[in-house]
Image 1 (tube, rainbow, N blue to C red):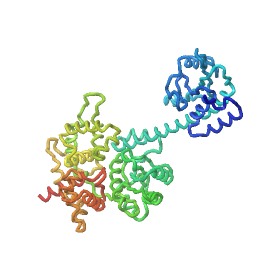
Image 2 (cartoon, rainbow, N blue to C red):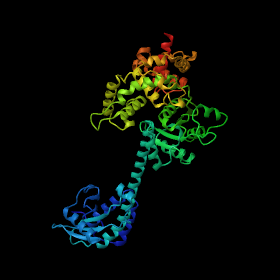
Image 3 (tube, rainbow, N blue to C red):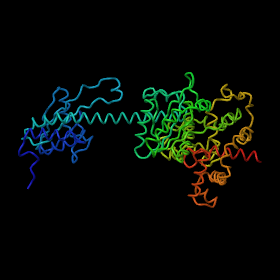
Image 4 (tube, one colour):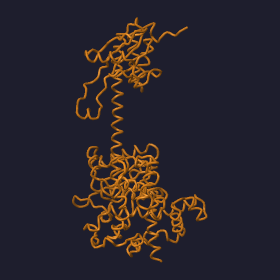
Length: 537
């Protein structure tokens, strides 16, 4: 015995209105109403667009994007042309299609709407039912409720699109800053807000679960919306915040150690922010960089990441980067000449096809690879095979093996030297580059043998030579010799992988630098070890 369609035998308008009201507040109101309306009419109910394609339907019917029928499409076009709101289409079979235009708001005709193609779509309720059914009153009531529910769902979809577009825009700004492309980053940021500051601190927060959302809201509230907050595109449990640097006397920001000395006697606002985050979200760990110029955001990120390695073992869960003298200025005009010559084949590269990466894109790939290793594919939003192909091209152009730590370290130093102020820039405080003969042969060993670099290297490695950390230097040296492979390192030391990892974790705390997670300090440490080897003969 066949089951009677729901409510068909005893139709009641009050009952229908009550049922529609209850369905309209559900999480999937449009689909639920269409499901019920199909059962109520003994047929099928769908929501179609002006082109006759299904926008929404019951769970067991046609999916979105399906063309209902040519006759229905022609009837909708006729309705639109005549300005009518309802029609009945005779399909030539045992059923008819009832069409009702859903009421919508005033269409948005602004230029922004036309460019974004987000104008509200006109919807029609289509009910396929037997010819003898009298459905006018029922469909009119259902269409009014369905129209409101459809507009609410459309608004929610539009909100999600806006949120996703904003997130992608902010991630794009961060990526541009990480590769040093400041002007386009400023242009995008000016539209998304807040404006990017001239000097900033980079804050890297390691979160648990959904804490990223809570921490982001706390930072935004504490800094009154002045921070640039971006979920890390590489690590799903990291949050990156670009915090405006505290201005010094006057209007110009004062990045560097001088600012730190001036603020030594008082609590820095960024320190208060870092401690506030760890106090509110106790499982979080926070690493904070020193002030850097906007163009040096990538350096600030590395500094904050190193501070995060220290924060993991700190009782309060917060650490600030302890800057030591940078290697780059010590290389002088010879360093700039060496870096230019090393990178010149990449700078001169002209892609064979328009779709192939150009010189700047290759340099960006190289920088990302040196910072994130295989996670560079996530950072650059490319396939891992594409990353492998670009690395193969970089190896050929530069004559290097970018899987080996010595070559990686040389490329790392070259990129940093090239990004620094030129030696003929008065701010650099070095001899003008023109005083260096263009045909002079400059090697990496030549740079590392300079007395100033040797002094830097000894200071850099001094924490590993402490008597209570007798195995620190040995472990780091073996780790670098094994190209940072833990299994090979443990085999060379004759200890287990877990023991090697523990030794490197202790070395992280001694150095104040990350070793077990990229971006790590492998390049800096290899250069320091090489400089000491050259000095000691």
